[in-house]
Length: 491
Image (cartoon, rainbow, N blue to C red; front, side):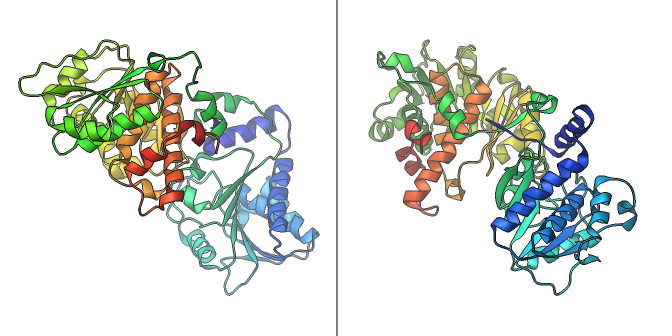
């Protein structure tokens, strides 16, 4: 997986490079400016407006303006902030003074009726920790009104580097050139959308380094997914690939059980048993004939199989507290337990029925009930919300969102970047739950990594289905049709 970092981590990495390795801060700034310069030149832009703050992000902009001028680009710089901040001996101040030797107009304040081929956003960087107001907000509004493309330096101004949240107002960039390492906020909405196309530019900070070694945030990628997918053996049988128990469904909600059981099979699970109500037997037989049914009714004794290698409880279960409690007590505590949908709602009401080491898959509403916090509060910092839930329930949490976040009690976070709006459809979450059940039934891999793989595959399925069906027409049934794990990790 690829590591990503927040603003504080990047500040510590910069300090380490400067103080421990002796790399001058001005050299790092020059490398960042050269990356911006290359991006402008590669775009063929010949007239550029640079909007600079008075911190290090502005320093990158001042240096980039100088480099562009040296290469024949017509440049004009607008500075937002207090003049005294550029009167000292910092790297940004030195680059500001160097610019005075070049034929580059420098204006203090927000641009007016200016026109250019490109706008370079070097206003606020990853250190921003308070809402943008006043002149800074007006400068961002001006950039967003331009027809010319906007290239942001390191991160779109106004986006929080750790959470992706908008700090009052934020730039809508066409492209972001981020320096040294990827920033977590570029992969979380709304920052992910505001960043446009993201490229990571090496500015000379080597790795691995102490900040990387202590880091706890990653993004799943194709090579990592391929390495985590349970292998297939030639000398195998159905018992080789695990036995999943799906406890799901209720009258009128059998689709959830069918989606989950079918997805577990599609993930390569050797045997899937479905504990379902008697009324759902015909539907399961028609839609998922491979599933071995364990039926229960008013007079039926429930006996759970002893050889399951993973269990899923909750999709379409309804408010069946008696069944939920019985299963939680009867399930082997050594096997992975995925909890979804109604299982999560019952857990929120009866946390004492839970156990350590579960895999919880809440959407934001369910997470709100589990955490007993407003949804709006959770949205402010999805990684923190996921980690807090993981620690509260001593379990891995897959917090479902446009950028799903998988966290564990140790504080590790994986941000998912696959998927699309077409997946916002009934049954999509049941498919994810089944994917996880199928994966955990087969593999003894690190639960956090395996859960992150499940989220990544789920999004990849959605992306593949959207190509064929479109984002408006795709359904959960389409996700099952395209759930072909070995193909998905190769495309």
